[in-house]
Length: 134
Image (cartoon, rainbow, N blue to C red; front, side, top):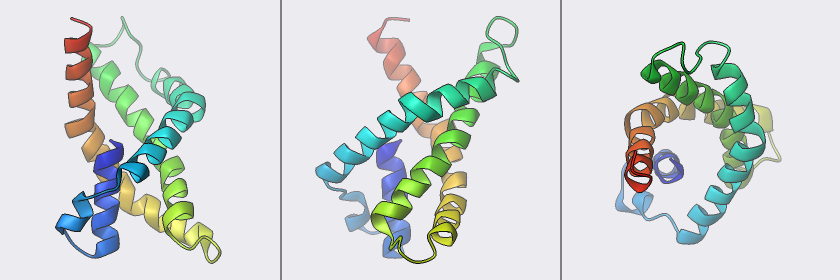
């Protein structure tokens, strides 16, 4: 998810799809992944669970409904947080921080939904299933 969203934001920053947009430094991915993991563990994950389980419940609803509910809630929690992080790290946060964050969030939300529901989420679930023999 981190690589996909960072590549997408690089494409936006560079004004188009170029090879450079796909060459994200290992250092950048390392610290962004660390930030995502920390925010997800302490803020996004717990909040997403509370939101998702207000609408869907394991055992009551179908597994796909629970999976989609959790995925949607996770995007709704993590996208604004990571858009703020991206705004602070990659844009000049000294001027118009709120407007820059709102623009970043607005551009990232549709892609975060698509990426989570269609690419990253299914891949992570498949790898997890293979790794833990489910």
